[in-house]
Length: 365
Image 1: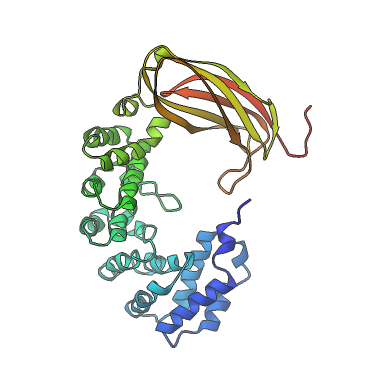
Image 2: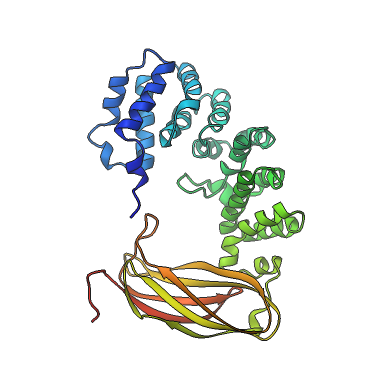
C-alpha cells in the first residue's frame, strides 16, 4: 500500500525546515519552543488535516500576538514554504482572521499564489457569502491563474477534505456568475475547477447543472470538455438529460450477452477478469461502463461505476474483456463477502453477475 500522506509530511525534517523559514522573516521566533509544541505526545496519532491545524495553533503561540504583524511575517515567508506544511499559513487566516476581513481576504488571495487557500476561505463564505463573493468576483478576473482558480474552487459546495457550504448546496445560484466568468478560462486548471464545482452542484441540484451544461455545450472545445467533466456524476447515474447532451444513442438496439468471470472466487489483492459480448443492430454512440457493488465494513453494498470506453460503433458483435483490481488502496479498503458486477450501456444496466471476495489467507468453503 502506498505511504500515507500523514506520514510523508509534517515530519521532523520538514517541520524544522518550515520553522527555519519562519525564523528567517521573524528573527525573534522561538524555534525550539515551536518544535516542542508541534511534536507533543498526541502528534503521531493525528491525521494529516489535524496535523496541519495543530501546526497552525503552535504558530499562533509563537508568533506576535498582533494579527497584522503575524500576517506580515507569513506573507513574506509563504513563497519559500514547501509541501503540506504551507497549508498552515492560509489556515492561520481561517482560525485567527475572522475579525479582520479587510486583512484576511486579500491575504488568502496572496497565499493562494503559492499554496491553495480553498480550505481557508470557506469559514468566511459560510459566515457571509455575499461579502466574500464580492471579493471572489474580482478574483475571477485576476491575472494570476491560481487566484482565478480560488474563485471557483473555494466556493464549491462539496469540496473534498473541507467543510461543506450548506447555503450553496441549497441554492447555488449566487456562484453561477463566477462560473460563467471562468468557463472559457485560458488555464485548464481553472476550467477543471469550474467543472468540479458544477459536479458538486449536480449532487444537490441536478437540474441547475443540466440547464447550464445544455447552454454551454457546443460553444467551444474548452466548454465542451468542461461540460463533460461537470456531468460525470450525472452520466454515471444514467441521467437521460446528461446522456442526451452528448448524443448517446437509445440503448434499445444494443444487447449485452455472455457476461463471464474467469474465476467466481478471488482473494483481496487479486484481479477480477470478466468478459462479455456487445451486439448492436444499428450505428450507435456508446458509453460503456461497469459497476462493482462493493461489500462495506458493516455488510451493506456500495455501488461504484467505472468507465470502460465510449465510441461510435457500427452494427455487429463486439467481444470485450477487462480486469478490475481488488488491491487495497489508501482510498478504498476491500472487505470479504458476496460482490456483484454489472455492465452498463448508455446508462442502462444490461447484465449482472456475482462473485465471492475472500481474505487473502482464507480458503473457499
